Amino acid sequence: MKIRSPRYHRETPQRYRLEAAKTESGKVFFPPRAYYPGGEKAEPFRMSDKGKVLTYTVIHTPAAEYSDLAPFALGIIELDGGGRITSQIVDVDPSKVKIGMRVKVEFRRIRTEGDEGLLCYGYKVVPE
Image (cartoon, rainbow, N blue to C red; front, side, top):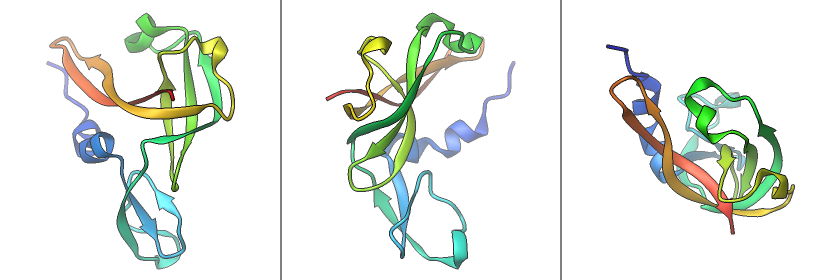
């Protein structure tokens, strides 16, 4: 039996609800941290589910657990209202992805983990 990643379970609230933290200076941290630069205080912050592609790459040779998805686009998404996420860009041909393209965050199956087939869910982005 393979040991499950505790990080997956620890980050479940952030992954499901896009929970972040916003500091006094307006910086958004996702996922939230225990401590912030300069000792700033931070408040819980729910990020928007809409944004735009800042940059992306097309993965042709992924890790074994994602081999059935290749090729796929992976991008850094700037969300409206603050915050950035790294996400797979789905429901669009990778050759059609463009910088500045408007996208929406959706809740999807990310992968199946281990021999027992544990389903891991999280977010992916789709064209708006």
